[in-house]
Length: 637
Image (cartoon, rainbow, N blue to C red; front, side, top):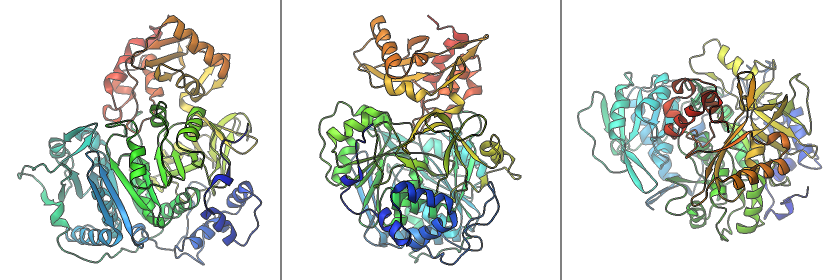
């Protein structure tokens, strides 16, 4: 296969090249740089810390404790907020769906963080306390997080598309002492009043000392509240220069939560130092972000990509926040924002690129990198980007996870891009693919594993004092090796293809198949709006149905079914051809856009709805409920 993009198209000398030269070593290509980065972890991560001037020179990089339990830079201190507030120029551009734009310089950001941190100290907040947000993706969330980090408090956030019950299922585990809560948010042309949900959430968090009301929509709150209340303006009313609690490298920074589709959401704890070190590597080297650059990734505060966007501040980039639907009022909304604000690195989902397939040419001369994550990116969007956005744009499909609040594999300005593939493992990530016997495999599907520690691996799970749940989650299959739960193929040219979650594998006649291989074919067909495939063991047999949502104006006829089957047979394999192709009105997803393959499979196998997914973890509960009619394979044709 010929690459669709090569490093010669990149418009400048990238930082990853400068970094390689700064090591004093000689590398022939990206693969040789990556090999050094995983063979000499201490040398690589020490070089990252030195290149980005993190103040860790001369320190021990990591101890000899194997995974899990490796300690990074033991005995050192590093505060995330202090690193994020050391630049100048424009720090944050916040854009509301209604078009309102708020810009904040680094001086203004430092002033607000300093004032808010002193207010938190006045409430008795100390290092280790939990401060949480029920907030949309606005500048308020960034300021509140950095103020909490300044004090050494632990941050966590939940977007307001969750109701009070879903937010409490996450934030309530942390027993927070301060809640920042907005009056509402905007989505798809509507203002969503969340004041009632805020009141219910406050009732569900009995340990709160204070609630800060954040005016996103400008709605009045009820003055009667059981907890001390302050307005956002009041918390910023007493100026104070920022001061930063010295935090050990492995002090907890934030808690992110799993989707909650298979049980109570897990609280995943990450540390100050590991995040700072990793995000400098990922953003500064792989996405080539630095001072003067602008960074926009469409996300909500629920998703790890919000945390990644905020970390753009670490490398001096201006972060562009967008609170709203990516397709309102027009599908090209994100492209318009990127052009208007001269964005250099834009991040979207594969689903968004699919929704843009009918758009014409776009003018984005400042755009260098287009990131994509959340699901495997099929080949068609790579060609669309080249034709409609520009051949100069580097498409960086990535795979990673909330678990490490980072990536495992992605792109770099020095790696070629092949359609439908992820260019390479990230620097410092000892990524491999294992078969069921724990043997490394190339050019065949295996379990995505990481064989050496990463600084951003979780410190622990929340409420897991002996670490048993943490060890079982990642190290229970291959002792001493991180198993992530994805099927991946390492190609002989060094790229990767992710085939889907290993817990939702299609297994027909003993052959493992990836659902992503089916989606790459089906979702590119005209008239198909969305699709979901599962394989369910039923009564000694195996049923492999494909569910499709038809685009407006299209019907699922026998001829269309035949076209779908023929396309899968030809472009994937005969084994991928479904037993049935069934039209459904909608498909359920997590709130970060991932298809709910496992919950649908369990419903079809007869599990009750309340057993397969938490209501607040699903974007459309009725879409999930619809699949109960197929229990036991009753929808077979």
